[in-house]
Length: 437
Image 1: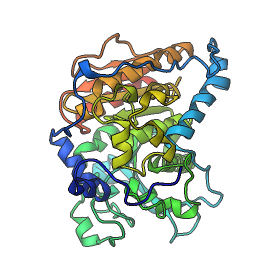
Image 2 (image 1 turned 135 degrees about the vertical axis):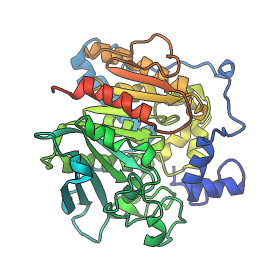
Image 3 (image 1 turned 90 degrees about the vertical axis):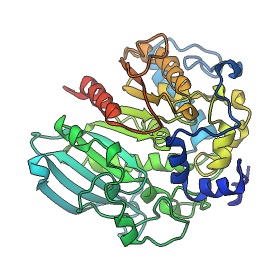
Image 4 (image 1 turned 180 degrees about the vertical axis):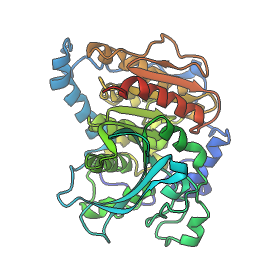
């Protein structure tokens, strides 16, 4: 199947296609305001009949009966199916990957934090593709601390008003492709997304907070894969990395760096993402078992939600509106979800026995909260086989009543967003699973 053309058709009107293609943040604003796109199913009675592939049954029909069989046979089989049909294959660590400490300061914010900003150069060149990791570590913690690693949508400088945070050097979300970075305009965004990042609470719990602007890794528009890290590689084949796999690849490169940082216990790093970056965190955790804990916040279609339910956003809609996110092979399953050899509960199962947390929001029907819960529930047999517990609720919990075993879940009251409530649950979950390791 040939790579999609830049002018691939999308749903809705021409105006919406431009919004979706050039400025995903405008779409996000519309959704977070509570609007749900028309013409999609939000009625449980209209969910089509489907049968989920059993995560413990091999492609040849053999049933998995041991943890060793899962690890050596079934897990690699499922991972390969996701690579071939959904996210695409990614390259390994670049031979010339290098790290450069841009800035460091200790004892800031009244002695609460230490700050470090590190540039990860994908090919070793300071003028080549690169990303900047912003790191805040609790200054009073002795020895390496566990960490939360996240991607952000609008630049590291937007997560806090700290004037020392460096502005992004790459494409900025909300600008047209090729539009030059305007530092004066970008500066106005300093701290605008602070409400999504409970940095002080994270530090007070004794965790490191680290974040990267996702546009540093790969710009979030269909540029025919010519920018970001893709500039270093041949054009992707139909079963090779789309943007979600690329952003996940960048998270693994950040973990490569974290293994060298004395502030961070790289054996206890939780990867967390929201919305499309929640899809990314799940795929990063599935691909790279160095991540000790995986968190998906409102990730929806292509993330935690079961695709076969076709509730809210669908595979066809996500492929046509965001043609760069997944590999080209995923187009085969537009309006054809049952033909796909995998579904998203198996993605969660790939994280086992490491803990995974899935979060939904009551007003975010587009992301199919019930489908997100069911994904965790149907991953439970793998967690139990591996002795990691499961999701301790037979039914989707009521709003604001979290449940947590080896798999955690909550349905938060409110819209498509990340809130202090969400972070409090993630910190509790991390305390349960990462402390004392």
